[in-house]
Image (cartoon, rainbow, N blue to C red; front, side, top):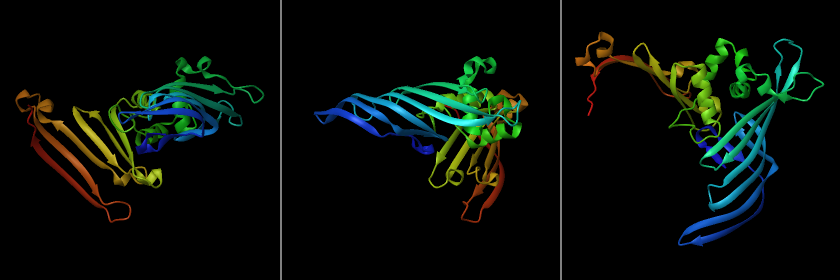
Length: 277
């Protein structure tokens, strides 16, 4: 069951159960319940072991979800470099396939001889969600990230309302995380064309800075030199002249060609007038 084709976000489920199918006037209706067995997994940057059930109540491709997914990993305790702590990120996935609802929690093993404890009782400000997302992406909690690691997250991961990852289970969580960590990013999008994610992913980021609008995009995970960059600003806003508010200056850097071709770099600047209706 693919939630987001662009990033290969999917639930792979081994199923067991029975459903009834009724075809009424060309519209198939499915009812019944199917168990998601223990060898199933949910894939999003990491592989989560999954189990639960799918409940069909009519529309064949939009079952109700009752899925529990778990990812286990390890982090180095920042207070004791030699101590490895088990971290368990847990997802309870409800709602339906097209409108999934997600509840995220996390447990951390504070001592080697103890069971992992609820991180909500330990996290700074109780922000378990940000720590969990940071751990999934980097293996570290949010306050342990260096400035370079924060920049790597901004350039390698995207999510925005209205495009790209909006149908994914973690989209809303990831969007909130990016906007909290990088307020200068207004939107981001990742598209995936196959092959290795690093070479096949096309990342596009945009935001506002210095009274203008910037965009950065391209297959930058493999080589930052592939970045297409543009910056647009209204001369009316800069000069505080409302009469030329629709007169824009754009500075652009474009890269043509892919990894297998000789790349062509173009730098240009242009003035244009935007008509508003």
